[in-house]
Image (cartoon, rainbow, N blue to C red; front, top):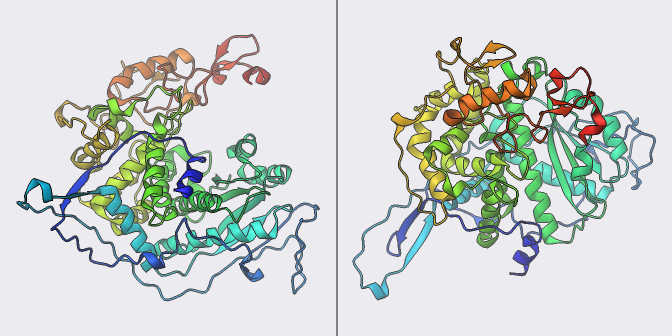
Length: 550
């Protein structure tokens, strides 16, 4: 209980939610096809990381690109030029093909006096999380080639701590995807903001966010992100606070949670992009980048699923409270207008169809991707198993893609033997209604005939009528990934938004704060104050008074 008290300090208090449950009488034996060896699992929140653990110098790269002397003196046994980088290639171990076990608890009917009958509820998500931990124990560990680039003020102790956690994630995912490329990770002290800007801005270019560091850096915290480079490749950035207490179990748990999440993102991006990353350059990213065309629920949902299952280990109380907090993130901010407990099947269908756009991770506390994604990935893992999901992810890059027919959709049908729309109606939507209803018993009534057809891979969508609302004066159907930057004016954006919202929601990501008004100053990529004092989209402004945006 003491540990839970510490963890709650890091989390918002979670409201009650529950998932699909399977009832198992006490006379029923649930026999998984593999044994869960909890005592050997490598991910456990109660394990205390020993700060004195030594990482061999040949497995890391410390590359300060400034003249600032690191706070920790590192004396290599050989002379290494400051600009030299070393790529880590961990020695492979024997690769064991991971097996996927889907454990289904089958209730039996037992006639017993009411006073002697006991019932244990086994939730679908609990089965999934146990399965993931089981896989972690069994999986071989050849790891991934890793290049660590560290800022000058990062201490050796904190550097070693972060490197070890990232190697854990690499050892988990490396055997699955077997990528012939280097995992580049920037490890940065919270005191090295200038170094961060000097080194990351040229790499990230258009994708560089000058406000990210100040919003994430903390002297006592670990925080990271998956970064995009202008050449189409991806990398990771992790800020490690200079006062992070490596003897505090809660701090260690949170750091592991964060690094599992961000490390999973790296593998997602790497698998969904070609080795060159050419198709994900900013010039063509919407039309050709499979990674950017994924569904709203995939990236954050997939990373959150493994973060939840692996960081909490076998601590059921910790696992339950962190899961509920994540699920409640859709409405945890008092300013949020979203109440998922009131959603019906049509509401959930709209969100499931959303692409990976700004509406997916909105402002004003409304972050759809994490809560929606976690629940969707739970039921997906329950229905298909990890091996099939990994097969689907790996196959996406082999399919042709476009904004109107992203590669992941035909790959889904090819891998799972049913369309993603059929799966939504059959399993995903009923699960979402149960998970997010107030008592876990939401009314499930799905009439597929009364739902609008999907706008993905649909010939009708690609050939809009002359009466369709316009985007820069061109009649445009309900296309995903439109965004405010493509609209000619606020008025045009609002007309397009209003036309399609009832059937499809905000598929163009024009209303990131969910107030019903498209491309306002409060929306991501929305209006600005023009030099003449009017409020309009940048495209409609000859000049932008940047100071007025603050």
